[in-house]
Length: 409
Ligand code: CTP
Image (cartoon, rainbow, N blue to C red; front, side):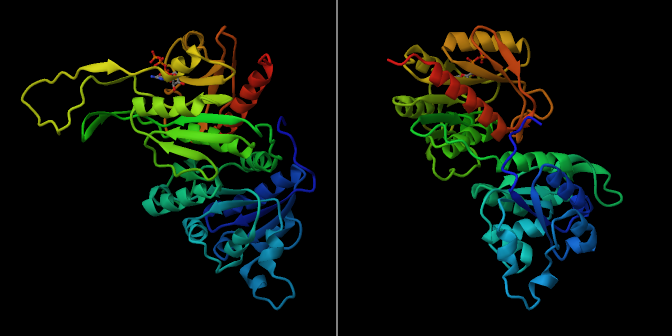
């Protein structure tokens, strides 16, 4: 176990939702207890269709909270007692539970407890792929994410009802759930207090005319994760982002741009007094040499578009680096380490995180990333495949080290 263990007194509330995966809930409870955590459990009415109160209570500390107990005559408010924990994990999380939480409902013990709780909330969904992908469920997920809730899975694999076989929708494994919960409970370092961090994220759009542009599928998730991690560690954070579907992270100054030229202006302005600049943006290398002011009608035959190179923002910052730590990202499909090291040297970056867009689990838009840290002199280390938030945490650890290694003037 490489993760620091939180205080042994930490207590987690496990809410069990109404999905087939509820049968795995006792294993999740056991795994959490093995990590030295106190564990309370609540089962929703729907969960009790899949699993019994008895099998849950044998794995939890004390009685399992259910709606039946909530409405018993008792001196304490059960939802408040259950909410007195350090974090919550919602396993076998159903579309119904997500909707209730995203809507702020409190009509059962699980939802009322969720409203009362402090500390991190981790959702571990398990449902049919079509349900998970439905706009309603995705809107609820985005809403909860914007409030700082975290998600693990669903994963691809065998699951569910007869005939469904396999697909996206399987609940994450109990040991992975316990490991993620431990990470979330770890006391947050405030080592970026007093520092200014600038992060660029997402794609750029290079308009050819008012309605057409050149772009790429960058989701912005990596950059947003860096901005949120830096904020939580006490930094003053400016996030400059191209068009993405993610909402402004609370507590971060967010600047929305479209083109590479706008990105350069916003990043250069924000970077003037920055300590750390992290360029995760997937900047389009070229823009139209001339942008038409009117929509261009189609013409018969081939069309040639004249493109001109965009400025290299990272190289521009590197040319007059000052005390700043500069971090870049690179996507390569071959000769990754050599190319990334050459890039870091050319752009005067402290290091570059290299990812392979063609590898499973690291494609555009995913929640995980597997990167290799590459230094300008070619030294490099492979990091395991972890959540983008965990990549952000390691990235900032490295950047802080680099900042402290700077000679003081
Ligand atoms: N970058 C930048 N400005 C650009 C292009 C890239 O600041 N115009 C930054 C990216 O945000 C990233 C790093 O440079 O942090 C590497 O990006 P990449 O596109 O891989 O590098 P390029 O120099 O464009 O190399 P290639 O020749 O492989 O396209």
